[in-house]
Length: 258
Image 1 (cartoon, helix red, strand yellow):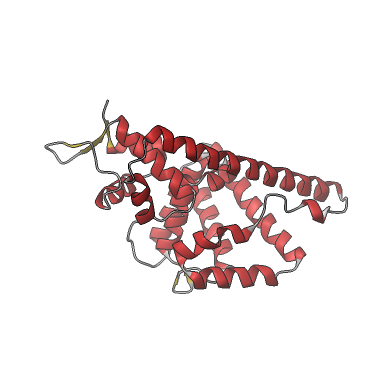
Image 2 (image 1 turned 90 degrees about the vertical axis):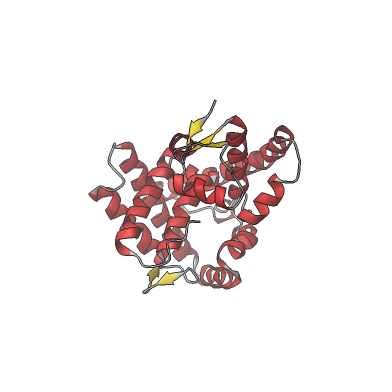
């Protein structure tokens, strides 16, 4: 069975633009190109796309992903290896969920926080290579220094702001609103303002660049660590589309696809 590029983008929670970019890089060539120029993808291509999105979620850059995919390993065997990594991520995310739930319960009840339990499953240094690969060593160094300089109270306030944003996104997406609607665009403005607080990110005109924000939106969908924050792939897709609309209207920067 073959599917059009629009159908594949919809079921995979990505965009036709991204799929075309993967094709241009040799990562995901279409199974067939029709006489009208439309691209079509068969089941083998869908398996390859699933692996691409998984490897993106693990922090690999696109050139490295192509090397992995072209290594000759059978797809089923490779996916079993990916499953091991996913289950590790699932366990870590489960620890984070329990830690955050405990913090929320203590905050709401007025009980003292259990600092020794607040950071189960958290280790920001584990993303060092990923951040440096995507945005450069300076970006990681600046962000790391900024975070370490924060007091425990400031870290909690920053995390609380992130949670309020996530809750707002989930509620807006669940309401049936449009990503380009007023509510979603207000959330997008808040999201960009929240991102702006961090140093080391690509900027244009003092604000996060259009390319950076659009890239984050794509990562929210492709990376299970982030899509879980926004209620799953559909919710993350809503955030991505809203951020892209906001970025195109309000931010500066290159429009090269990520």
